[in-house]
Image 1: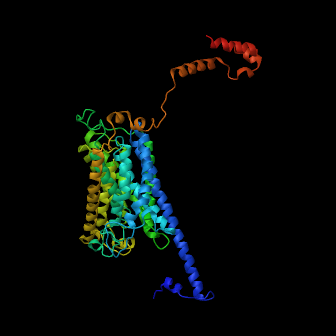
Image 2: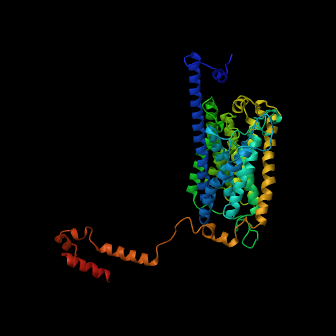
Image 3: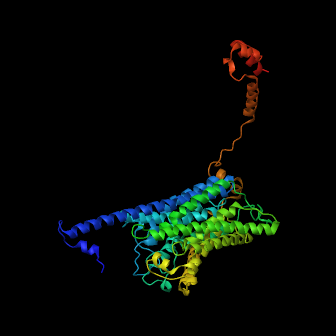
Length: 519
């Protein structure tokens, strides 16, 4: 027999009664749990937000030196524009007024955070960090040729409208694909625990649309006159250390992204969060090894030599992390390894496919986020363990195919992936075409040639000024003079100076130095 403590404590009780003491302890524990849950989401959300720094470093290292400042300012403004858009309308469209009793296409309350109070604000912060991550995915794919105005406009469009509708449909209580709906799709709803589809596919599909409409960088597949180059020209990253730093920062941020998606921690979610941390680690590591080894074998077959590509390690890691995100709390560790391995293969395949189609993605964001994200969504329908699913989605079940699950879950996953692709395409294709026709999308070819740092941001990100010829001449003269001076200067004893052939007195010594200078 269970007792509804909230109803029990609402009854009129005297301060001296045993019941009042019980209710006092209950109130204290409730307040403590709420505080722990708020702190947990604050910490997890901060980790997710730190991924902005990871994206910034990865993108900055991947582009050419003449475009570093441009990609960095775009990454910063992702967070700024995303915050304004998500505060004003995005959160309301995603979660506003959602209940499991009705099915809605879009939320309709909490605009400008109205109606939110107390601990409820932490939910806005955590979800904002996710929205900003979705927008940042696009930055790298269209780097080095996108106008600043277009970037601001699409970033706010994505975080304020496109992404929130996807969130509402899959994560909202009234979403038509949500597992938390009172009557979930296929009886189970789509399962995307931390966002392989909701976040990464949304950003990745947007990146693909933008890259196709924007066109490749000059010299990548076509020269300045539009003549096709027979062999695609790779643009060498200007800083591999920045790329690696960005990869590690993103990996750390993923521990807020995936385990943090439990949303609570003080009421029995510790086991779910712990599993998510383990599967996240295994997925990322497996993706790195898979991509690196596969690329090495392909290179060996082609050239007869063995070489290990650090780009494959970095992007394989990110692909594995993306792939495991949807099912991180619903799969066993061995399944995370399988998903990570396949994610590495998906990354290589989609990356090479883009090159063959002459689609220019400066940082391989599309293969990592769209390709591995799609695989991650599908993988849940294959590897989801029924007991883990029941824990992760509050009893709304479903099981992967290898656990004897029927077609319901895999159909829901495929439907969710198709919905994301269809919705993002329906909105963002016309949006980017309008920007293109309005002349707001691509920079001038001369600006692109000289680099966006100089043409748009008042100069290079690095001070690469060399010493002048006059400075070098002074240095050479100074160096030759030092060779003639004794180690300890005029402070040596007179007899020691004399033994070295240097005038003994200070006046004679100064005269000697001046004579050398005037030679």
